[in-house]
Length: 178
Image (cartoon, rainbow, N blue to C red; front, side, top):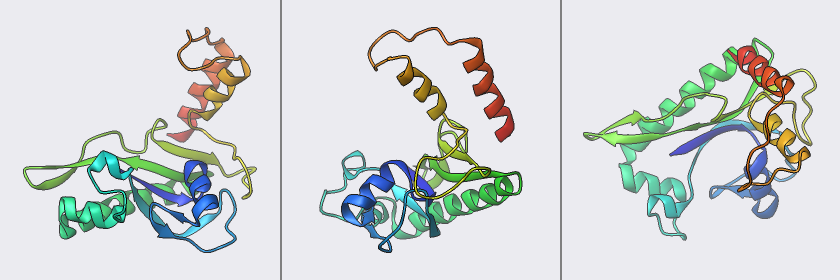
């Protein structure tokens, strides 16, 4: 499993602030939250989930696990899909900051095995009002999480009833993406 990022944000921003790198890859000094990366990159999920030793570079571990050529194919496909979608969205005033891709080898060949570019797996931001250096106006699930937090909800407790205005806002955002 992996995630392609084109902008530095969220957990990747926090990791960069602490280490200067993301997923074992060094980035330029002085980047800000929501800065655009010079080139989008495929990040691999934490080592333990892939049985990669903690001291091994995640990319090298994935290459070992899938084989260098098959991993290169997976990486190329993920970056290509992300690039096409990012350009398509940008022409419509939407930034795709990051998107998750699930893949697996089936009979020795790489296949996508999960959602691609859905609001649940992708950070969509509104180009209007975008400014690096902080949180961004987004279309993903964060507005729902923000509303739940404002209502005092915590994980493990019963969900409050969503008002029609929240549901309508979520539906409007998802329609706008597509």
